[in-house]
Length: 213
Image (cartoon, rainbow, N blue to C red):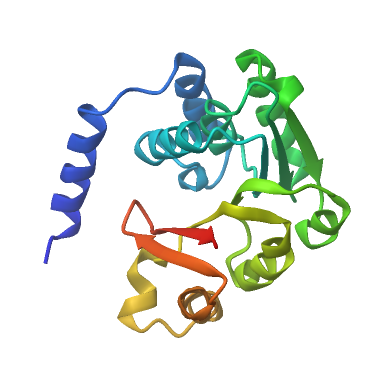
């Protein structure tokens, strides 16, 4: 087994030999650490580069993000948008909007991003789009519900990405708290759903890639 110190060293090495985020993303990441109580909720450089690569491969025209936080992942995904592409991103905490809006404007992507503030369970049903990519990174206990709400809004051949599905290892170490149990159930639900192909990657805190058939 790799201990935590070694894992962090490996992660730092991967970051050092990967392409670096833009200066705007660097500034956003720094401000997130300075001004929020849980900065680790931001995707970070390595996962951010993965989201950028993935988006560039898909070249999406319509993206739904459930959980904006300060907008780091939003801007990474925006790097791969088609020329006429658009992201709808939902954040429940209105106090974070001033940070995300600031950097959406600095990036020049503001016109391609619509920010929704409120409960995702209410907002998703009001967005009438077919999506190429859905990125789920909000309340973990509601992941299964979010999936049920968006699966019919995803195009055939489109993708749903779900973050934090390893939950600091608790999903395989036998955690008994409600969030861990919800994620264990979600992971099994994804494996059993015949409408999708499922790949869970041990990237950062676990990232599931779900392809709609």
